[in-house]
Structures are given as C-alpha cells and as structure tokens.
Image (cartoon, rainbow, N blue to C red):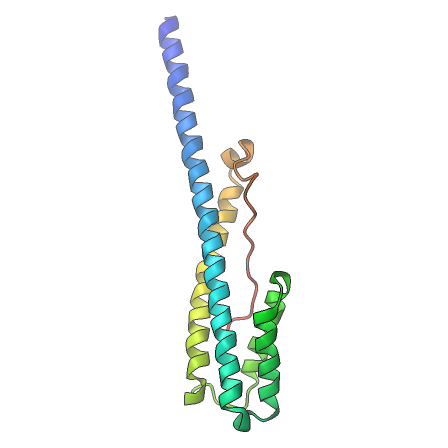
Length: 162
C-alpha cells in the first residue's frame, strides 16, 4: 500500500513540476514577445517621425508656419527619452492632424503609410502586453514568483494616428 502512495506522490510532484516549468517558459516567451513588440512599435514611430520631417522639408511652402511645428515635433519624437515618448508622439499626431493639407493629398502618402504601420504595431503591442500582464496575475506565476526577474511590460498610450 505504501508503494502505491509513494508512486502517486512522485507522479503528482512530476506533473506539478512539468506544469510549473511549462508556465515559466510561457511567461518568459510572452515577455520576450512584449519586448520585441515594443521595439517594433518604436521602429514604426521613428519611421513616422522621419516621414513627418520629410514632409516638412518637401512641402514647406504649402505648410507655411506648420512646417516648423512638424519639424520640432518630429525631432522631439526621435530624440525623446523613453518616459517622454508617449507625450512626444501625441504632440506629433496632433500637429499632423492640424495640417492644412488634405489627408488624401499625394504629399501625405508617406505619412498615411507610416500611420497605418504604426497603428498595426500599436495593436500588436497592446495585445501582447495584455497577454503578458494577464499571465503575470495567474496563481501559479505569483506563488512560484516566476516573474521576479522580468520587467513588467507596459502599454504605450498614444492617440490613434490619422
């Protein structure tokens, strides 16, 4: 009888260990995906800022006083510190919305393309961060402290581009 009981305990410990190991692996994969999604989003935001700077340079006569505002916002976006990035991106979005050029104007093609890519990257980032934060709240993850060495991913709260 003792042998069956011991076999059951060993089996239970092996199953629990397997589950915890699988969960730890999943937590690390989701956090790595969140970091990759953040890097991709930053890359798309940089592309959008560069497209805005190009627009300001090529269409300066049509933009008038708005060209300088676009230049300042574009450089602020590219040069901002990570904790200031959301604010800089929101300023750039607001300035691009206020331009005296119609959104369907051919000169705005680079901005439209960059905005579409930014919107997709933002959605992917939001989804991955939501999943990573959700798994952090799980009982097994908290009990075994599987996230103690991982930085908590955070949402990137910016206005939707044009």
